[in-house]
Length: 151
Image 1 (cartoon, rainbow, N blue to C red):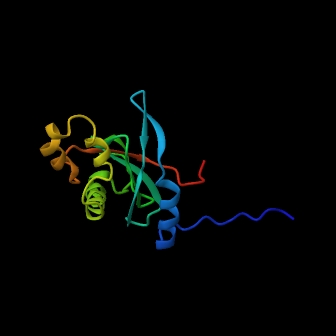
Image 2: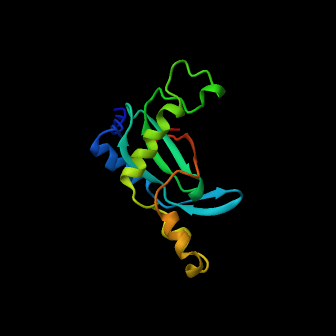
Image 3: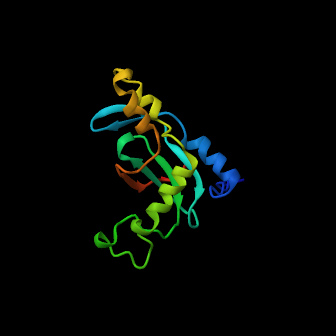
């Protein structure tokens, strides 16, 4: 008898969110500008659009740490003037929704304590508090991520 292939979970449901979170929110080593770094990506609970596309979104201040966000399967990851989007929503149309979903779920950056523990804590105390609050004033970059099990 042949092997039966297990149907992957629908990562857009509540149960799928829990399964996806267990797979992706793991400490991992990555290279960032030639340096080894330990990161823990964070899954955003909100599903935007049909949730058929998984993206990584890294706040400039906390790279290479990043969020994983499920967005519409037809949403373009390219700015309109860089790509013929064929009518697909472009980042200028969906990025604020992603930011709002993250800000609604996270009061402070999940990685803030790791970043602001380094150095003279007293010297950075006021600055650290300001930088702990979630804000995308410094910008972010994003990219397409593979779903777990996808090659």
